[in-house]
Every structure is written in structure tokens, then in C-alpha cells.
Image (tube, rainbow, N blue to C red; front, side, top):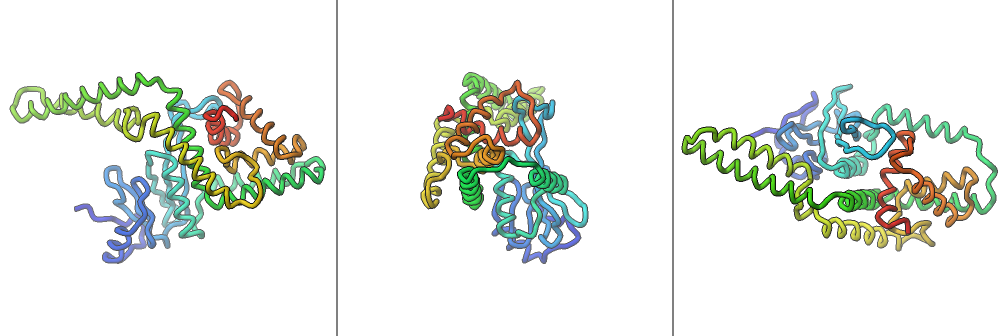
Amino acid sequence: MFPTKALSTKTLEKEELRKDKGECLRFGPCGVGRKALYLNSFYIDRHYYVPYSAVSRVFKRVAMSKGGFSGKGMFATLAYLVVLYDNGQEKQCLFKAEETVDEMLDAIRAEHPEIKTLSAAAEQKLEKKRAEEAARPRPRLSPEAEETAKKLDRAIDYLEKRPALSRSLSYSAKAKRVNERSNPAYRWVALFIVLIGAAMAVYGVWSILTSAGFGIYFTLFGLAAVFLFAGANVLPTRNNNKKYIDAQLADACADMERYLKSYEGNFPVPACYAHPITLRRMKRLVLEGRAEKMDEAFEKMKEELKALNSDVKVEQEEYDEVVTIKPMFLVKDYE
């Protein structure tokens, strides 16, 4: 009924396209096939496609909600997958969950490492940061501090072999934190409004069928209420309640613990905090001469996180790091 359309000048044969789309890995409204990326239209999932031969870059774009980034607090975000093709053409796809974009990018990197998965601006910023880090004068490290830094590098490399595990820890901790700080009454109020909206929609349809007056208005307002609250993750559903969220975090910690059993030696931090950003912040303390031993770096890193709250202004990069790992420490009370 809705044929898949090519966005690029390069296309696939009809039968080739049908088979590839049917076998593609699905991530939200998009998909990763063996021969093409499948992207959504405003209404239809995987309605467009771009063969890999036409793709020049794929990356995540995160837009802040009204107010933008001010360096304080946490704002709701909108996550997009951006695909650049045909020498500058761009297609942007909105995702409901940011972690789904990350999972899709992981799949693209695994299947097509030649495709760049950072924006040009992000690449330049990363290169500049690396150059600044390399040029920054460092204190002379003791043999013990050098050994600590090497151990942290090895642990970071180990975690980055399975990035989905660390990401799952971060996202599930954020979900638990949001759930803990949300008033449960709001969810039941939202449910009550949705039920009223559904009743209005049913009454509106009945009114239209029986020519009983203003049925179309009841239908529209009722459906608007249902879709608004259903799409805003406010309703207490099977996947949006305390029990489910707690189980998600427990599963993420258990998955990480199983993975760390294969690590040679003692891992630098507990499994519930095992994230590359956690280790990089510890390494930074060691390289700056503020810590020598692993335990000392870990404790000082926790002290830094505790001191960063909504009243403290930070740079964008620092903010991104903090909002990624701080929920993991908050839900465990920094134990």
C-alpha cells in the first residue's frame, strides 16, 4: 500500500529492496539492513531508504526542550538520527528514546565501520580536545600513579567492547531516578484524563453515526487527550511503573556483573558504576596528580559528583558527562 521510496539518487532493485527491508534490524521507526538504512516519514515507519553507498555520515542529534542548555539542572530532550547522503542531503528522524538511537548507531558501526557516526562539528571538537589534552602540562607521576592510569585504560577498553551494557546501566538509573522523584498522583490523574478522553471519543463516534450534533468535536478532543498522555510516558503502564523500572536496573547491574567476571584481575569500580565516563574521570584525577591509588581516585571522583548540583554552572561537555553517570550513583546513594 505504501511502497518504500529511495531518498538518494542511488537505488536498489525492487526484489533486492523487498528482501533487505524484510530482514532489516528494527530500531524504533528506522531499520538497519544489509544494503540500506530504512528511515521513517512523518507517519510511516521505514518508509524511505538510503543505500549505504550513498551514505556519507550518520549521527545522533539531541535537541533541548524550551529553555535550552543553561548549565543548570536537567532538561527534557528530543533525540534524532541524522543521515547525510548524496553529498550534503540530510534526513532527520525523531526517536522516542535516545537509547534506541545509540543502539542503531552501534549496529551501523558493527556492520559498516567505514561510515562516520559523528557529525563534522563533533569530530572537530573531539580532535581539538585531544590536542588540548596532549598539550596540557602534567605533573610527573609516581610509578604507582602510572600503574593506576594503565589499569584504568585497560578497564575502559574492556567496557567499550560492549557499550550497550554501560548504556543500559545509565538509562535504567535515569529512569529509576525520574520515577523516584515523580509524584505518583500525577500518573493516576493522567490515567483519569485518558479514560475521560476515550469516553469522549466513543461518544463522539456515536454522535457522528446518529447525527446527534457536535460528535466530531468530542471525537477530536477525546483522541487528542488519549494520544497526548499515552505518548508522554506519563501513564502507569506495564513498562512504566516502579516494579518494572527497578527490575530493569537490577537486570542491567546483573548483566554487567556477568560481563566483568571475564575481566582479568579486579575491576576498578563496582559493576553498578561500570561506565567508561566513570573511569575516565578517575583517570583525569590521576593524571592531574590529585590521586595515586585506585580507591583514592574513586572516592575523589564521587566527591566531585556530589558537589555538582543544579546550582553549579558547568561547561557543556562536563554537563553531558555528569547527567550520564550521576544517576547511577544517586540511586545507589554513592555506596
